[in-house]
Every structure is written in C-alpha cells, then in structure tokens.
Length: 124
Image (cartoon, rainbow, N blue to C red):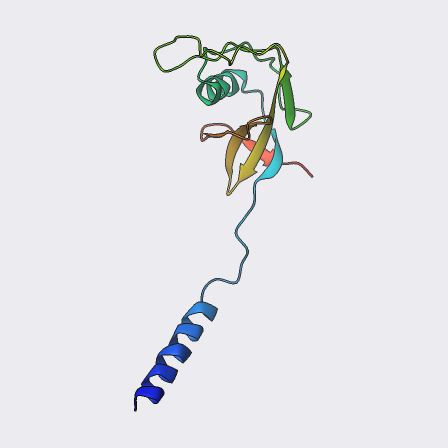
C-alpha cells in the first residue's frame, strides 16, 4: 500500500510539472526608442548610476540600442561622491525590452533599471 501511494504521489508530481507552461521565459532583447524620450532616459540612467541626471541627446537610442556617455560622478543616496567610483572612461548603456517594458542596462556592471514610461520596440 505504501509503495502504491508513493508511486501515485510521484506520478501526480510529474504530471503537475509537465502541466506548467511550455513557453520559454521571455529574455531581454535589444531595443530602440519609438520616439525621442531623452528626459526619461536621463532620469533612468541617473537612478541606475545613483547620480544626478545627465544630458542625453534627443536621438539617443533611436538608431542603435547602445548609448555611450562621458564619465559620470557616481553618488550615494545623500548626494555624496562614492570613493573609488570616479571613472575616467566613458560609460556605456544599452536599451532592452521584455514583455513590453523597456530597461536600461549599464554594460560594465550589468546593473539594470526598468523604464516603465519609455516606449521602445525590439531591434529587428
């Protein structure tokens, strides 16, 4: 009786696992903006990098999914410079999309920030 009960439980577990969605989890895809949104991009990058907003060109992310900016002063939540984070190299970001939500990712750290108000589309 115990063996039959254990077999039945194992069968139900296997059936439950196979009944889950067979669709793969969507991955982040490279994206481009559908219209200029430099203010929202600037704010998203500032949140991502814990810095003040930077000037972003109107055509940022319009033609390519990568944006290169001048080096940034990285600050903590109180606005103080973070020691060791003053970089002289340009910063690189990419625009990504997943489930109709846009994201900006810092290419060096892989830190990612959602941009829920930004309108973008996957790169073909």
